[in-house]
Length: 496
Image (cartoon, rainbow, N blue to C red; front, side, top):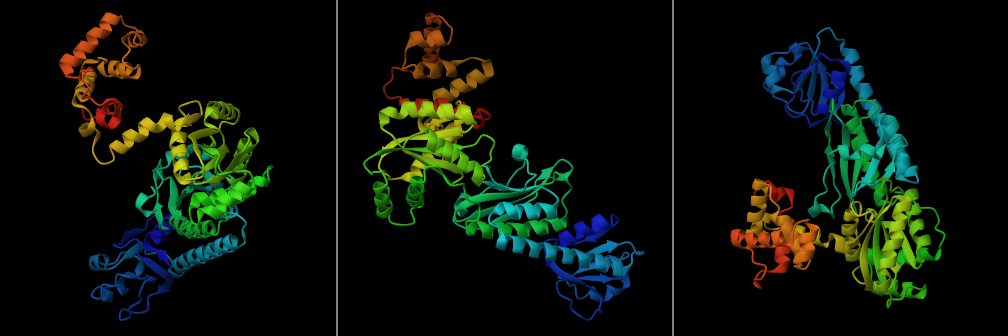
């Protein structure tokens, strides 16, 4: 079965003069038949016919079939039936054979995809086979847009130019696939599908970089998405090369169990203790990603090896769209850890997010989530960021999840931001520096390159004109800091 819109797309490729009157383009139809008479219900099939054969079907108003009419039918037929109109001089058997070959080709491709999915060792083999059929590169991305599998000719450089389907946070435990054809220059730029397998979101992408995409390509792509989902569920994404520290294989297995929380914790904790990872130790959580987006098994394994060989008591493995690592470390050693990671970032181009060391193995998924939040800031901070670097953005984001920023901000801060915008002054910046410098007037004046008396004059203006008194103990410092951050946001700037 193929949707009517795909048949029309292929017909336009072969017969540019074709016109159509289709009310249900996404309805599926089966292989073609020649017209067999007005009194017979043909069901959801493709029917090749002449215009005069349709008049008897007007009263029946059959919506299921798609009629390929050789010549222009009556207006009544066009309004009552789903029809593609081809030139009258076209040969009916030739049209029939063209559509029949389309079905045969798609059936053959679907069978080849099925056989490849059943025999391939990893998804990369399946994507390579699909790329040959589609004559365009194909890749599989994780939720952070890392490439986790791809066909040979895929170039990840321009991934950001494609609008991929978003994962629905409320559907993270439901497997689903949503089709999308993002518009690019000159028409359809890509085929994309969201796959959610085992609570993990992936995006399958085929870029129209070698040739234009047609209706039959989307049929193949739908089949490909199904087989990719199957291989993901069978964990055929690929395997990393054997690690140098083979003792960490057992540690990784135990850590994965603690991260997934799908089994009792104590057996995993006991197993870790037996191989030198005691529960009494303090463990720092890391999240890492390559700068070039390539997180295929071999590349992820290389990043894991880099971490494990550069730091003692480190176990690293790919999980949840990043390379995660646990490092046994005492709190005072954290600055040295950050320095080591900075060196690794300069060496490899990888980025790292760090969650502070905590005793034991409790809350490992939450620690990884904090490390990921830090990772989001790492690119702007020389490749390494701790959660403390991202905490302000996290708090600000949470604070506006229920109420808009302009309702949360202190009124004096909103008034200053509006005044600054209108008069090109710097009252918000002055306030922010003053708070950051722990209300040290001399230091703040120096950072702003103004005289101390000028700075004190600004403070007085802030108090009298906007009503913000830094001596007022009823003003919450946290609320003030939050308000200053929120007015820097683009969404609130457009409304003040």
